[in-house]
Length: 150
Image (cartoon, rainbow, N blue to C red):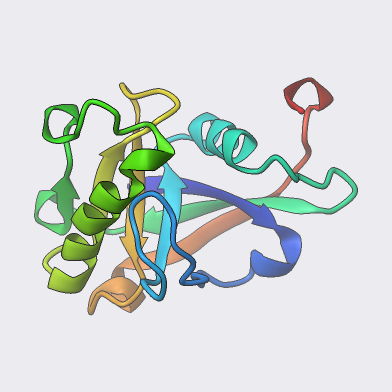
């Protein structure tokens, strides 16, 4: 399976996670957020990064994950609170993601995109025992922002 992540060029040489809290993880939980398509990864970054610096170089990471159904935990829309897209729901969503992260049962967490709920984002647990053997950067390419997006 191929997943996509866009990041500043200086961070594109390795699959590292910051440990910063976000919608599906708490602080010091080291995960990488990816899109199921390059276009979804782009859209996710646009809505989450009001401070995109077009004067800096970005890279699109194409990440290869050797994953089958047993490597993926899926959270479906019907499992989420009605206000799941709002920032007020973060504590509940972080609890779901944290339980997955701490359990170490699967490498990937498949979640609906808050931007396009019919599409999926995948969260990679970089502390999972299979991370090093199943996840790698397949390719990187220069990512140039189309000024109409910003």
